[in-house]
Length: 261
Image (cartoon, rainbow, N blue to C red; front, side, top):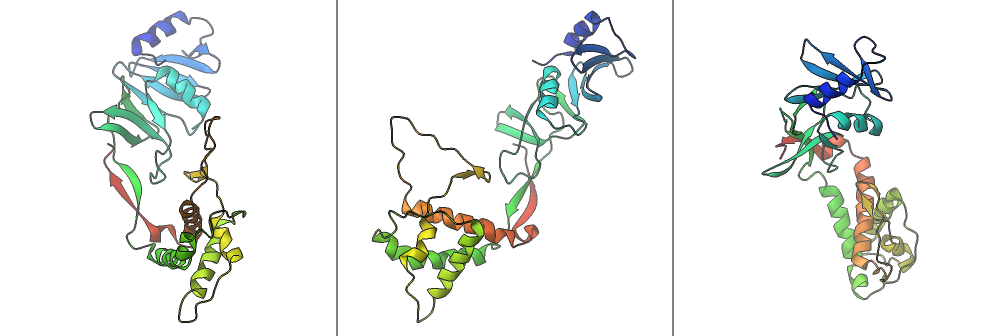
């Protein structure tokens, strides 16, 4: 629960003991002080002044301590909502979040940001996002197209429906796709055995933002097996991640700005 200027005045007035340089303890490792020059109350956590509470706004500062505890203490005094990146394309790691008539809005958090007593940033800035450069992945997509063509007919007849194989790493998957593409081209395309192709159809863990995603199912239902097409797409995505690591980041993405809405 956040505190208003008036709330802080009441708290400060009732904390009369152990005053040190006008700082009064309000809880463990938290202090409060009235700044008569700026006409605001200062909230300090350990040695960092995290919130300045004015009559019509808050000024927020982490002092570089971007931790759950620091933010828990900030939220006790400032009405502000924050989040991490809502998408991997967002450049910054911390954002102030609010809602307006256009929907959910984000602006990058920085030390010293000012928010209204209702939690709206007073000077929201457009957010920086990464945008894929058109055509930058054409080389990989051409590779994926060759691999799909090499296995398409065999997928239709159900050859890979019941593959039991451990999923190879991203780099090994990319290497396998390159080998398949090379051997299936030209007038003398080779027959590639089921055993060589099977790793492309192994079941992979589901990822969200690059991390393993736990998929839960009802205890009354058996989870449906992943389709052959989905398993192949997962392998191609894994190879794509490996391929991208071989390219400089600025060859794949450009940084642009978009409205905070």
